Length: 215
Image (cartoon, rainbow, N blue to C red; front, side, top):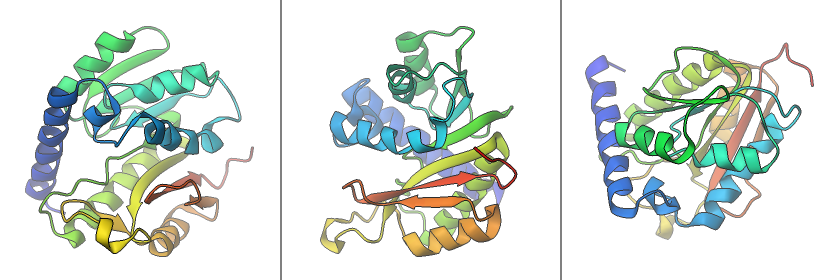
């Protein structure tokens, strides 16, 4: 992907989510989810990746207003949390809601400038607008490499599924093929890959552990 293409994608996505936040505030709809229940259900899928130690550090790429931090803390997780988002208004909202301190910080950006035990991306691959599917898939794969570098022990992400009902799909959203995505991650990141699509939403979650890590 050329830099102008990526810049356009990031600019359009940032504007889209900034508008959602402006319209709905710090709610699930403010990060373009249907409601709080499904929002929490998405969060829970990542616990399988991060719940082996309550002190592991987390990078949340596309953190929005920081709802995943609140979820982790309520689940007993106490590790350092670093949130990144390309929409400055989201980062500002996260700081107002959650503050900053020794165990949390917030940054505007599309690529972490440090590493953590695990890196998470929830919802950032869904809204493609009018970008062609092939270009969007290239953007996804580049971002997966970013996550793979950022998470020393592994990473996780979710994406809308082609297994969803065709009449429910929207043209501005991207739907991935689960077996194809699984195969790509297995070939690129090693055999410790899990695909979850049994939690009742029109999406799937992929969890990747780096091969040298055993837990």
